[in-house]
Amino acid sequence: MFDHRYSNGLYAYLGYTWAHDIGQDQLNPFTPYQTGNASGDLRHNFDATVTWDIPYGYPNNWLVKSLTEKWGADVRWTVRPGFPITLNGPETADAADDGQQVEPGLNFLPNEPLYLYGSYNGAKIPGGKQLNPAAFTPAPVGVNGDVPQNYFRGFGEDQWNFAIRRDFSMYENRRL
Image (tube, rainbow, N blue to C red):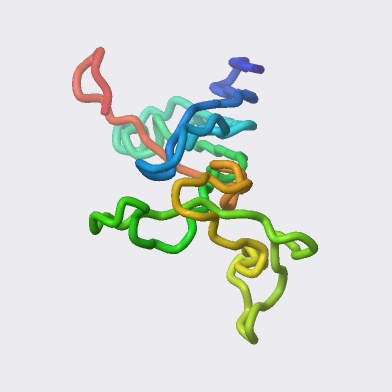
């Protein structure tokens, strides 16, 4: 982590965290608990922020001063991977045949790519990448399958934010 306040109202922050959240989950009431990546497992997080309180001088005119003082600019950059995704098989009747609908686990199919790129069935893939539906087959009800929970990841985030702000004094020691 880097956190520093410079002179003339400039402030900078850089932060990086790594974490691995592991948990136990159950696909449906008929399968055993499975240990794996938890739903909130975000491994890498990076944040960068720069804030600048724009200098305004000290004009003698109260109107000019009230319009030009206490302005600032902020830039923030956030980068992180996507959240984990758990794949389930098609909904089916349970093994006890009591009318409950369950989603079994999935098995990998050998020699099939896990991802498709570009287009699928003649349509362009949003984001340029998707899971290949032909790479998986449903496991029998009551079996987790060999596709681990939260094994795949959704799209990550790479976001820039820019803001111009102004502080408004309400009282001597309170600002909005």
